[in-house]
Length: 258
Image 1: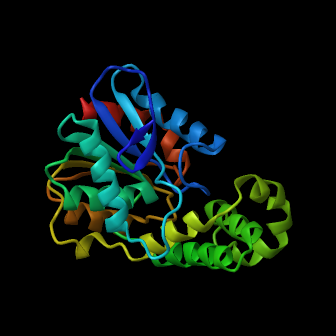
Image 2 (image 1 turned 45 degrees about the vertical axis):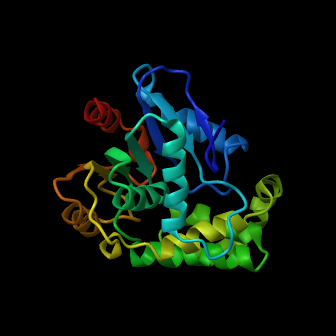
């Protein structure tokens, strides 16, 4: 399915649409198996109550593209839905795009859910992602994927990426060109909600795990301060990825969106 410039995956539910901006996958678009699995997992908490429109950016992103330009493409997708303002869920990097989308397009975003994301990248997160993009631009996809994988599970794991890179060879071969990944990372590096021209007007829920190394408490609290009236919920003992499967988060999101 195509909405404006964006390829999307949509559930068959007949409820009001929710635009769901997924996290940072190694490839853009929705054709790859990893994107389809992510879309299925993301739609599960809202099954039976909302029509979930999942997007993972588009492929063929030009070098130098900004988060604002990515957000503008998502605004076109909302217009293509022709259903008026919609609720938006943004996860991790998708949450950066969702914040820019809501700030730039208050007439298009009704309610906003931000999961495992913040007003900007933390310094350590920026450094990790920059190394991933650096490896991609150097033509070393195996090293880039190793850096990304280690960064999720091991603090300061980048030096080990050289050792683990050969293990990523089969996956790197399957996903192919990673230039869209590098472009997205470079765009997110320049994102800062505090620098947006307008504050987010949409009613907003911010959710993250207390053990999220990428978005620590101080950064989440600043994000809450930058979004008037927003609510921050932190879920104990959960990391950046694990919080997504927390039943309390899913119940909170369902309640917020109804």
